[in-house]
Image (tube, rainbow, N blue to C red; front, top):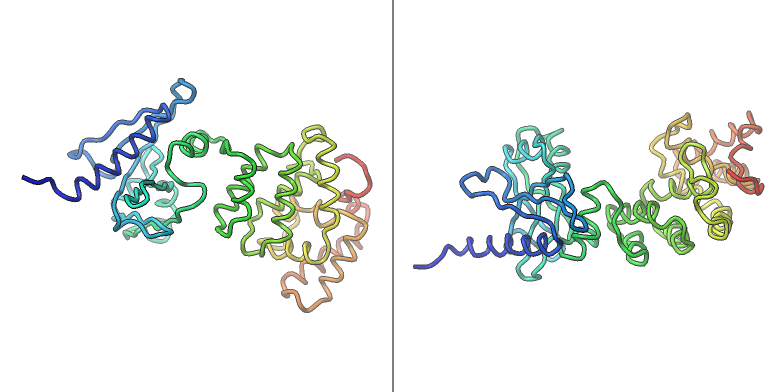
Length: 327
């Protein structure tokens, strides 16, 4: 008598997940196959020996049919998608690659909810990257996944986060920026990383999380860091670097805006310290407005900001960050 081949493969994935979860001190409870309607297991999060009031469901797939060298795929029927989208528990999908002896995860609840908006009665395969941040192993489970599930930033070394920020994958980039913004804003190397990323990366590989971080650095009454949150010996040199932004950087920033709204509390309003940062800002905006190498939408917004400066120079001066006054 021989066991079913796919059962062995399935168990390899479940056993791997169990080893990772229990190796991190958390609790895993498998769901009987007779009651498997979209969850293979649930896990209870434990941090430093303390059980946290957070239970998470898992859907586990294992085998070569679910993976490629760079991606994982998790097939789902319409009923599965409805189940994950509406369930009380957050559901994670975990795909185990037996060739690499590792696994990667996706937030299935969020993916299912987003898919159902336009496809309420369809199934699909959720394809996701084998990213730098979503590997399901013991190290990253404790330092990335558990904090994420608890609403906390990943506990990852700054050097590694900088590789995420510079990565071409937009989701990896965004997670890296937000983690640095939350955990390492007191360190000079963090701002060097973010400023270099903004200047060097193509705009399609950037998200608004990065310029928002720079606006927080410069100071903003609504979103900025408090004046004493960042050591002055860190903040002053970082601000000085941002104040060197010229036509290329400001035009890139303008192209990232979702619209031309600068009323509070829009994205444009949040980024005003970058647009009005120095005495050179009006000149930079006028150059962008008059240069046909930039997209019409970028030139139009630059022109509107320049006119705003002309109409109300006192208000515009509020956004100056080259005067040495604290914000």
